[in-house]
Image 1 (cartoon, rainbow, N blue to C red):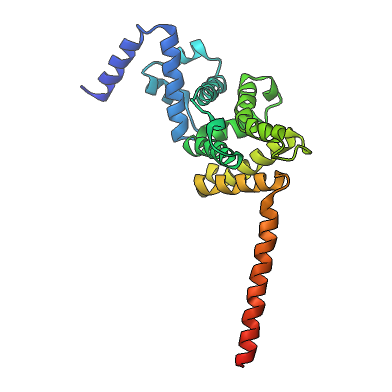
Image 2 (image 1 turned 90 degrees about the vertical axis):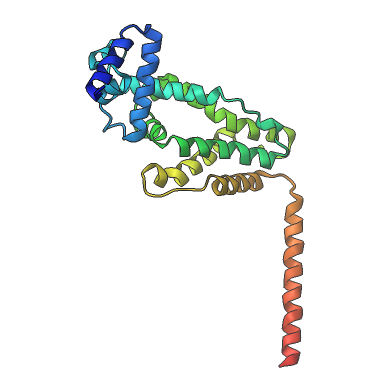
Length: 237
């Protein structure tokens, strides 16, 4: 069977699909095309071919390409939020922060095209805050901020900073550190970056940290060792 015959056969089968299944196939095809190309380069004709339908069928369900990809983004967020996560079960606040930040970074690493679409095409739009994607993104960020909120409530972390400020610090850092990767200009280590961000945020907000005293004692001990070594060296000279 030739490629043309296979495409025609696929289209014939798709004519019998219920609307819900057809829409799901279109969204899946659009997501696949987006993963291979940037939003601007993705063509409705390519999405239709991938879904095994004619272009006109897509316009029966979506107003335009942007409308289609907004639905793709909505489904993506819903997929992320439906994942079975329980960061509260991780032992210790610092480890919880590492886990939840690692989760965010792994999502970006897995889906750079969808991340770029949300950051570059949807978020700058004046109506973004009125969209379902915006509401879903708020729920997404809440997954991270819940760890900070509980640690502040328990008194482990300092609550003198507003949670929205902490959120901006975390996600601002994530966005800047992953920007080169999203622009195809580099890569990042999910493990290393989650470790760095979590440690900086945790230690910066930690109340009455015993580590501070230990650090001072260790520093004094190292200085004393250096002085003793210098004394020995001076006697030898």
